[in-house]
Image (cartoon, rainbow, N blue to C red; front, side, top):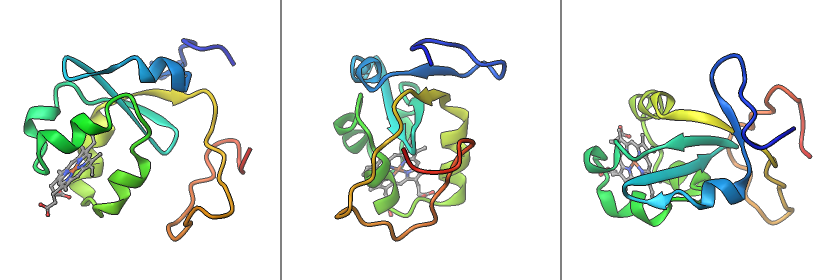
Length: 111
Ligand code: HEM
């Protein structure tokens, strides 16, 4: 699959390297669960503060987002910021905690 490819639902595919470039408050993306979110407009409104979001711009924030146990409303907000999928799915390692329901996605399984 090619970086930048656009799906019929308007979402695009990005490499982790591409996401890493968007690490500024004026242009900030984050990765959660192999999906890419443009959080630029949300940073000033985040109830948990701007700082925590700034710290994860351009990075994978899956663990940070989950560790706070965000509400359903927070997930709904997240959904509105969704811009694409990640090219290389995350590789889980043996010592990583897996104490949450796993979303196997469309491809059904780990890579
Ligand atoms: C775009 C991604 C995010 C969205 C849409 C979001 C949304 C929210 C919302 C709506 C709340 C209010 C409480 C709730 O409804 O759960 C909240 C609180 C909070 N969030 Fe986020 N959040 C995001 C990312 C993050 C990240 C990456 C962190 C990093 C640790 C974080 C840390 C916090 C903290 C510490 C609180 C405060 C909890 C409290 O005061 O009880 N959030 N967030």
